[in-house]
Image 1 (tube, one colour):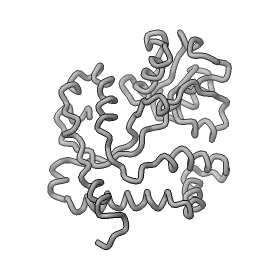
Image 2 (cartoon, rainbow, N blue to C red; image 1 turned 90 degrees about the vertical axis):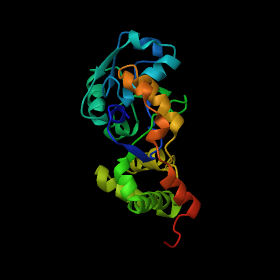
Image 3 (cartoon, rainbow, N blue to C red; image 1 turned 90 degrees about the horizontal axis):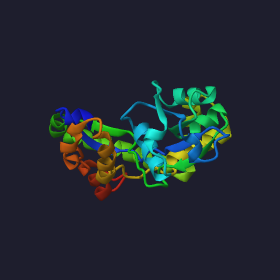
Amino acid sequence: AQAAAAGSDLIIIASNEPTQYKLIVQPQIKSVEELKGKRIGIDRIGGSSHYATRRMLEKLGLKSSEVEFLSITGGGSERVVAFRSGIVSAVASTIERFERAKVPYHYLADAVEMGIRVIGSSFMTTRRFRDQNRELLQKFVRAVIEATHWIKEPKNHAEVARVYGRYLRTDDTSVLELNYKLYVEPMALFPHTNVDDLQSNLTALAESNPKLRDLKVSELVDNSFVRRVQQEGVGQTR
């Protein structure tokens, strides 16, 4: 969206479910009041975890000015390392990384339960490529949806866990089952991009990038490829 606001020719054709951010705190912290004056790890100012953290804190009654945000580059795993070392008192993250690293924690808030829906990864291309390669993109979106249906089919549960294990390099059953619960069970069968969620995300980002206020979010999204698969049916002859 920020690239589009700067003039780039981009369009979103599908999106994953909202990231399941939780406000994870050190075990000794029992209330949001105890976060006053403390450091909270985020990806970067204006990034998705920063946005999610601010919204959760606001809903819990704590102003963002009452804490110190610390940007930790490299991704969620690096935030876990900073949390374990005590550099930060809290982070907005998914709990899977903490479980896998066996880092003690508890969480004060769940973003999705609070209605804070930060869109996960999206599939994007340029309008020019879309217009010149519609059938190719349609096949791609159909493949994504067919894969999602296969993943969510209960009879494939064991195979999905095996794939997770290979890429996470673990055979810990509890970790694999947690990944299944966190990432497979909530997965939407049809990855429509929710325009309202996207608009809500951009409202906060506009504070650091005013150009986003003029961006027509509906023009940044093309759900037609997903809708076509939904209308035609998954696995139909083509």
